Length: 134
Image 1 (cartoon, rainbow, N blue to C red):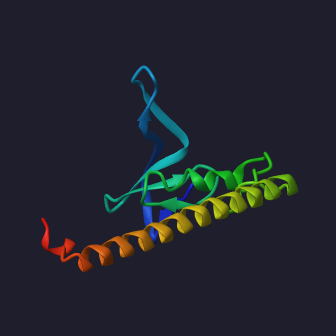
Image 2: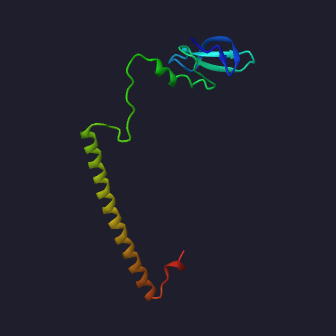
Image 3: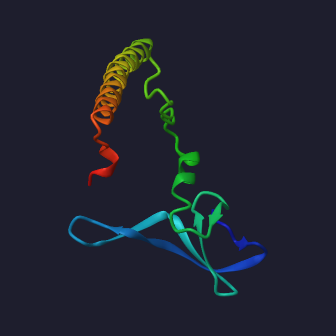
């Protein structure tokens, strides 16, 4: 069952939807669960073949179709990407490794800045100013 009215306007025609994707050999793909609804006022909406859900976007119905699936839905990936304890421990180890690497390069950068300051001061004492050179 699909919608018979959209925002109070009657549906004039209801048919399969031509998908924006093509098969590998270039043939058209028709979505049977996404219905193209032409309203009495000429507007085109897209509806679910299972209920009265509608969308103005041709791709708007496809995510909704999961609500009608008899298969259990897969859980969404969490921010860690893995819910197991082993996965969390591995991510923690990766973070610790990145922190050590960051700290190592930060120390090198700070040391290099100190060296540049000392060389700049020594050159100024000799009467050379690096800021004046191109």
